[in-house]
Image 1 (tube, rainbow over the protein chains, first blue to last red):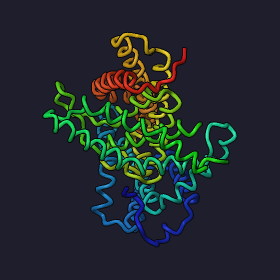
Image 2: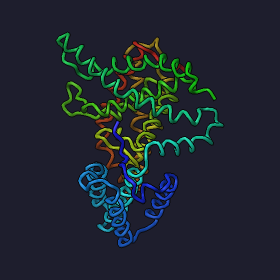
Image 3: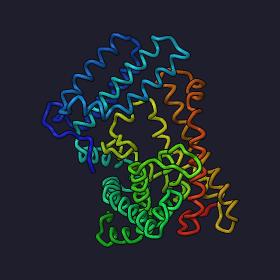
Image 4: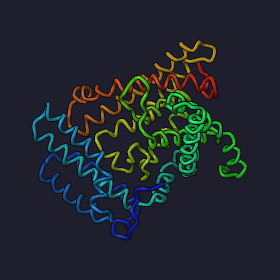
Length: 200
Length: 187
């Protein structure tokens, strides 16, 4: 599965993941506490410059962020119905800066580093007895492993429909897809336990 | 959480991801295609129950956070959480839990198909619409600097589509319960 991490060795890549996440959290708080348009505009400029230095082409960077930018614009337009222009401008600048900072963290941090951080974050919760911290990596691995299989299964169901002369519509493919996939759970769980992966 | 429950949850997350990768659904009579992912959240609650449904959606948002483009349209990464609609995404976990909670208590295998369908619909609608929108609207109001009433009104346009999804989730929940029941029974 493609990731949103961009390979590279820039200064941003070299920062530790935890530091970047804490930095992002701090920036978020600062952005929401600021109402000054000039400061927010500066934040957008800085965030944009940093994001463009990450290794993505501007076109690719924009393509990735377009859906979020669309929602920001739509929300700002909606807010213009009720609020003065200044408020809408503040919203657009603030959210844009936040999105650009967040996208930079995502692009410069490897998936493995994120998984390590999430596992470390989950460790204090182990004492609740609900799950083990290592389950995070296991669950993520399971999803990545099985998405292609589910897509194949959907294709097989569509072909089975075609072989019977039926048009494959969601009303007839969704339920078999779900049942066939969930039926694998017992086998997979047995394989995991047999390998002692969750033995702690 | 035992291994089987963890695997069921992770497999369901994989189903939700696959639903996002496949083209939007057109349900026969209605010509407007709907993206399947928020349907997937309702399905998780209706089929797996509260706990596993919540875990499945939690795994989904962890996948988004770590930088995998698993949301429909290839969206992913922390930028999604920075946008104004982030509340709806985080609300998925609570929506799935609520839907599962209600489904476990409202629906029994002995009930007739119609009663099961209505029960699942209520569970899917209250979880997937009421609860999810609560989280979405609160964060939207905060992030966009608009009032709660304005955020609420702005969200109303999406309700009809989500009611449709709740109907589909109810029908699918009934069918899966008939074919491969997984929903825990609690009273």
